[in-house]
Length: 368
Image 1 (cartoon, one colour):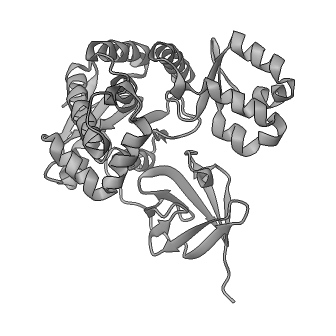
Image 2 (cartoon, one colour):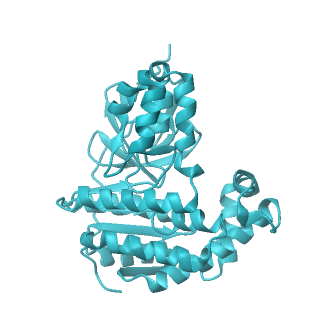
């Protein structure tokens, strides 16, 4: 293991190996060390390298779309993310905030350009352009970017589900490495030596229903054609994922750190991570924590604060870590809260959960 001076840190591993927890740890420690950093979660939106609920339209398609739906032109000009040869549209932004202005037909038609519906070849073309645009935007910045699940997980899912050969996946990721080299990237990979241990941990922490839901979502993909149904099919997918990811790590041509986590010695792993990125571990500042219930009536959603925890609208229990005397990180998502008297203002990254949109305000519920 060599120390890194990377401006791009890639956090990878199977689900439930600690990617999000440790991405959040890196963000807080970089900032406490006086370094400008940004953690981009795998389902951040709009995402600079991945595609979650995003349409991608080339210039010819865009012209045709505007010709069919001229009333949508103003909206798409406002929210479109223009790259070199394509335009990205955040489909959730369009649905949540511009449905009436665009019209139901235009919104529905826009969905045909959702990248999740692309062929693998068209996805590769769109993805490489997005990676190039991302690097162009970051090249002059001193900001450290932490990307989780971007170079291995998303790509392995995309290629493995369509039963593409490993050689094609490896060649594609090698193209990504060439693109990101100006950012001096480094890679951190969390794994358990026996993939079955990770599968067991995932089943225990998320429930067997999680396995069945993922299989149900993807069961029409070519990968599952001649494989077991339900949870066992997804188990097989995870085994193949683990084998692919380890080979990709071994061949990665960048600074990298391999962390075997079976024993759960997280204090040791954290020390290795801090050493790898060449920063000190600094304790959080002293702070009070908000308490009680806060509601956003427009969304009809609620945040509940108990001690140093927040119960999110989806029921997640997230530990709070002070960023300042009025700002707080959430344990494993890059969303931050700013506490202003009787209000909580959501800041940080926007995820696919609507309540995370930056600027969303939750007002304290007063008891009579």
